[in-house]
Length: 437
Length: 104
Image 1 (cartoon, rainbow over the protein chains, first blue to last red):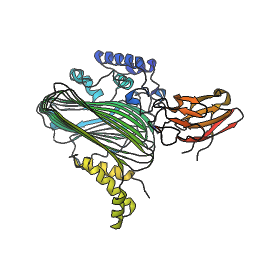
Image 2: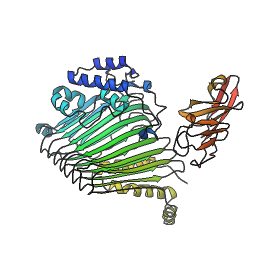
Image 3: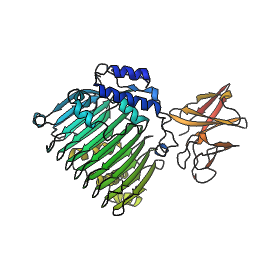
Image 4: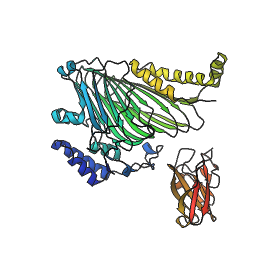
């Protein structure tokens, strides 16, 4: 098995070697150097911080991982794509351990000015475009992980759709991790005014149970009147540490449908942030999580209404097995200017074990006086009466539990309009359900 | 059932005193009190607080967040807001070594 070549640990020497290994424009080198200084300055998250209170990372060792290497391409790093079955793709970008492997885009799309490929490679040709948008949505000083990402991002994906161009075929990106390696992928999606696109993003490990580090970011820049469907399927092995900052800016009359599915990772801490910055902007956010073993998934969502007549609708559904744990902390924030806001958030948790734990913390922060904002949260077990009824109809207990779990997720699947995604998620979840007696 | 793992030297922990140790990817509080060693999970069952940072009083350790108290001998929850005990692990002393065997 080919091992990833990485410099162990996040030291200054390792950073300088990483910087040296990359032939990048001056502005980008300066940006990385400034972010590295932030990384050195910022304290590691503490359990005393509200955001980290329920997410214990004391067993995370900074020196166990390193910067993405610049060594030879990994030969044994392929991971299977799950979201693309039966889909006619308009393009595909593959990366292993944050290193670009291949990128292709339909010739007709290229002719219309659409860019889709590795961010690493496109920054050389389209530096001005990347410079204008990179970190526009992302706060590089938010915390130590954000700073590290800004200093060390590598590989990644750029999707740029020019004004008024409609991309009908979904585009696909897959980032794989080999054992012990790091992924610092940055997804930068730019839709100019009136553009449309669908992007399916997957992350997966090349080996089951392999450890690894993902310290990544997503920036979705949705222009005026444009429409983006973005699916993010996190399917790492259960040994991966996953830290991510994911943010969207939706401009006037733009629409974003963002679906997050998370099955993998040993521990995940994700900040998902949707900002509605122009009047009439709308966002639908869907979350599907299914945990097992000792997994710990922590999602912190923010629906930020910054302009009038904006709409947001969030639905997170989680099912938990074994001694796994999830945290969802969601906030709807409405600025004084954002009158006529319509915001909703809901989190449902299905407990499949007596020892799993789920923390659900919805929140509202409303500074305007003419809005409609509501939220809800439910947590419960599989209803014994439903199981009894199903068994009376001739189903085994396992079949009955599977049916209840499938029904639980159906509500969020109904909102996902892409068949291949619905099917892939349904199957992946089906495979994980244990025998319950 | 896992095996006993050496986690500390007897001299590492004063009496009374405690020390945070790592066993098989799990954080465990090793407590030395009244001449004996005990080990409990570093997790308050109320809000997941780090028990190892709490105040030790006799056989009682108090969570630094909301003050829930646990018996270090068997992990029993003694006061609100904790209602369930935390996990207590097996400990034995062999020569200079303190060994812990995890209980699931």
